[in-house]
Image 1: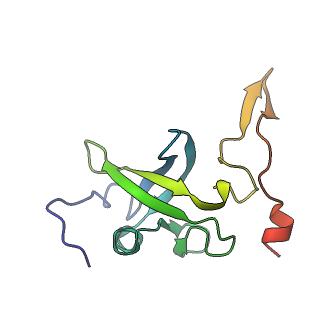
Image 2: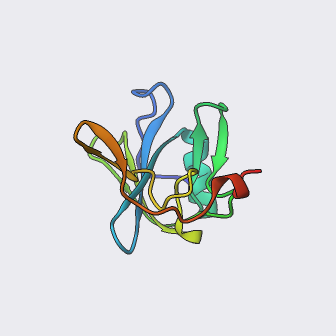
Length: 128
């Protein structure tokens, strides 16, 4: 376990804090997930992004199934210590479980969502 000279504020979010993953080379926002203390500690220890899955109520190592891991290059903490920004190298070119580089692959146009990115992989093939 890594000892830090500061504390993150996990209390405010009932044990969870938002974690934004950003491509370290392009600056593109790839995804937003949540971390608890254990997933943050695992991220620090392994150098690979580990999140807390709210739906499964368990730790989730990004890319564990798909192979599209996130190698953490830098971690930033906001001024209130309740949000994390992970600058990552996205292995495999896709962060989104739906097969896109970024989870933000849609844009609102004429009050509708329009897909504006191309798929990197077929999720039906990857997540059998």
